[in-house]
Length: 220
Image (cartoon, rainbow, N blue to C red; front, side):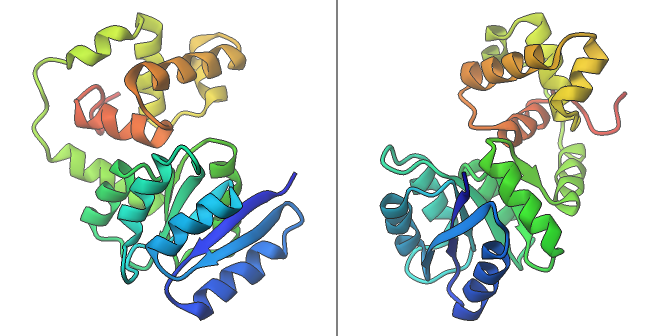
């Protein structure tokens, strides 16, 4: 089955460029376009896509607010991949907290875009390497809490261990190898972690782990 995509950007030439790139792939289909955030919400409801490529700065309703409404809409529910020329910190943090499953810069290579669409459509999450580095650098400057929040008490010891490895960027297969268990077992653990903590995907799990001091940048 093809990955169904909506492209939301206020520049028609940009939307056309993304459509040409994505439609050239046999497993990806652009099913709709939107010129602002409100149109993106309506298109998500109408076309039931797997992924919405969302620009941030758009008229009438920006991409961040549109993302919040789309991911919480019971009649829509696609994954949102933020695409922008603006990589300012406040946009990154706000986009992730809005429920975006990925964040890429528009000047990235084509193969990175195609890979990101497929990764996000599978239910995983993705951040551009430069964005990940900046997030970690930002968290390294923050004071670390002396105690972990109560919400982590819902996790078992093994789930807490898995969450730490997820936060360090380990894939399921790498975590399985590290803990000497089957990869299917790790997928189960990750799913339970997200459910217990009320998180949408791995990106939100990583942000939470750094925010609460569960892991620290540079620590072994």
